[in-house]
Length: 367
Image (tube, rainbow, N blue to C red; front, side, top):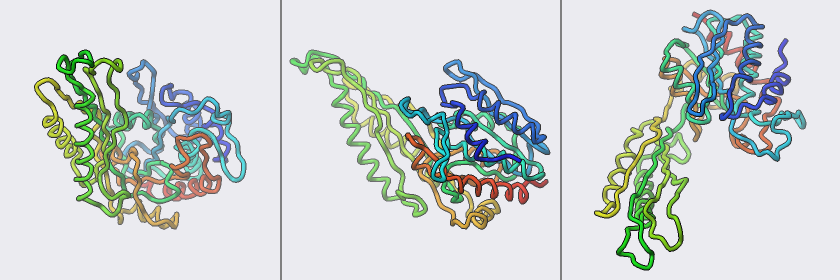
């Protein structure tokens, strides 16, 4: 009999920060899955830094139909001063450590659920590099072999079934000016001042977006943020280069390119004969909303006793939808304690999640 608390502690003890290979964590998960009689395979690749990564698919009854329980194996970095990051403790009804909530508790609950049931087809899908752009989930879509009928995507939702979330888009705006001596303004063209004009345009676009609202979300409109800015060489040099990193989170009903077009138009207005502004897109992930009355949502609502909601952060849900699954995001823990020192998951939620996922396998892991 698998003890989900013990298994979670074993998973936390493995450093699966996104910059590292997730093979050591997959080794633990694969050993557990094979002990339950599940067949396994790895979808392997080498990332841009030369590090090997993989998705692990463990299945009983094939990779088509039935139910998939999907969770990511990677975690965000932790403060080196946090002694308990990889030394999980159980205290005060909580399991603490990096990844305890996001999202190793779900992984432990999924394995535990599989151990308590014989439903099939069942797929346990453990992905890589969710934290850096859902890269593993994208590879599942590109391959197309996995085709579950239903799916539960694991994230710390406080046991609330999640109907959807906003998209995530990212672009780098670069202002190319001309360097010169700051005592002689006519010798150059300030890229930083041009970027300042772009900032005002971004603020204006953000105000425009408030006109289109969806009460399911908080805030109910698309949001923009300039998270990074860099430019200049010295205090007495007219800056010839300045970059801004702009992110926006569109509503599921919105085309993610809508803000991109507004941003490109704004930059075209700001640039001059001496300052050129480029917009380089890095991500254009649309939002998603699933049907409130879908079987998987109503089942998780009844089991958890929690009404469905939405979340402000991105997940692998859109990729499971692309694979044809009727899916929902659900899991133990609270995202507000994730990505920080002292991350934890309540033991009671972990145990209840295992029970609910086992019930989901019994209900949906059918041909």
